[in-house]
Image (cartoon, rainbow, N blue to C red; front, side, top):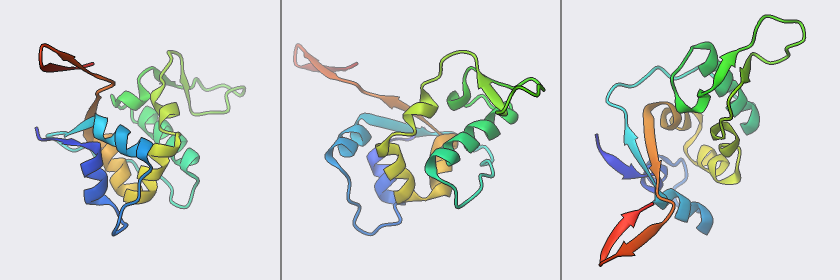
Length: 143
């Protein structure tokens, strides 16, 4: 499995010729390493021409209805057929990932690479995040 920085994925898949990124996004994208899955999953069909927040909500709903094991929907369950339930899925355990995807940096990545490549990133890649590098005896430890 080939590991690449998220920043490299953004630059290689951007629809813009000269990618402009805020310093905070550059730092974040350098700290996230992504690994492409050996076997790709089919991408969910998400409506086009919807807001980014609705895109994330639709993606979560689609993955829950598919009974996906994607980390984005860890803890989510299909809502019980009930007249009082207005959403298709409910999260009984806390999962911060869909909320994290609603921040400005992820929205910018979505705009740069487009819906299909963004879906591919979320569905067919795994990632790890280095929060801090610590030097111990001239060796670096990722935390």
